[in-house]
Image (cartoon, rainbow, N blue to C red):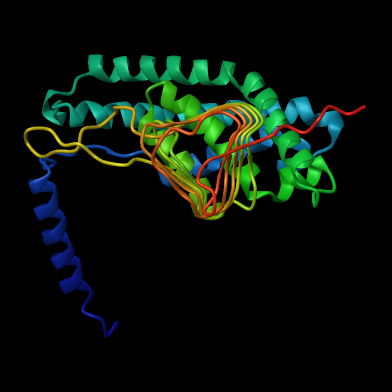
Length: 313
């Protein structure tokens, strides 16, 4: 016999759950309400193997069997994503006021069809997503003198891992599966310390060096060939509320970073401002106003024009 008061704890936990569900209007739950973290994790791990089979796939895989592995793994991963997408759509219908008592075979079929369409569109984007990631990988390899090979970059760089997750999550976000997208993003956040909201738009050739503590907000826009170092924040300056005091959601509130910008460690850039093309943001600075193109912002010299290097003879 256990010495622990298991029955009492179980009963008290039930009361707490019931109280919470009643306060949230969730007293008639008849089936699974939320996507599964384990299922999403498994699907994303499989998709990483599909995108980079000989680097992130199973150890026994050989080039001669890549297509077979990709076909089988992709089908399984997409089926899993479709199941989780259907659960998310059902959950969101509940959030919009649909109750289990009103739920019908017709509405379930509608969710199934919408989930299938979204995941089908997601699958079609995978080849382009791989091409985009290859540009990111090359940016990391060419941007870090310590990198010995592109294979090292794919296998061990946290910034690349975060971008793989973000590229996947951003597609799901655009396909109106925000909960799945956020779960995918948070998997990378937990492993790397890099927090990129799936709504952020990031151009090709992004290099997040070291990465720990980087935060990129939902409406941030990052151009091509941007380099970001650790502990950089692309955040919001303020959070307006509506007449009821609730935060207003969805409006652009994060920075726009144009092409070829470098942002050094610890910089904090807040609000819907624009960092002009080719600008350099020094370490540990606080930026809340637009920065013109080809400008160097540092603690000692707030605005200093960057002089391009002369062309090689």
